[in-house]
Length: 196
Image (cartoon, rainbow, N blue to C red):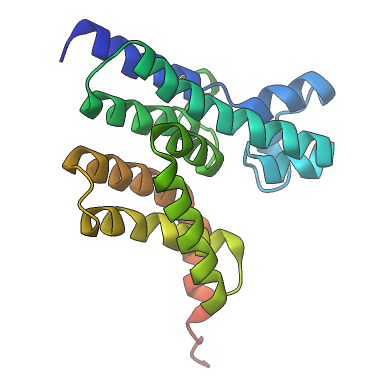
């Protein structure tokens, strides 16, 4: 790995750490969004505080930094496996941002943005899986999380390169970890409680 490769990965991580919702709420209200609502810095929680405009700005901002990280890596003409690492780094930066003490968002918008720039087929596969899963289980978020889990397996079955499958698996692991409380609650609600 060259110095240019390392710089691109670090830049992607730092770019991911620019949590749009956090700074937007700070600017508009002076509040730390992580102390409001769900405690997340993502679009849904920002929307609770700032309304629809806050939701849209945060969603687009978080997605665009994913796009920017991948396009910047390609501009530097680094090898394809390193671009895959850049994709994972920008998502990791959003979830564990250095400027915010490693307490950031949950990574979905940033992942979708980076997938669109990386290979729009992957983004379409993710959205398609989410739509199919929503037929069997109501709830966009849980269906989307299941789609993230299945996506690397589907990419492998479709003979995507190994570094792409590995990047998708890494991104999915980060996102599922970031949503671990929501997943735990969903499983707890699904399992009948024994009467005492």
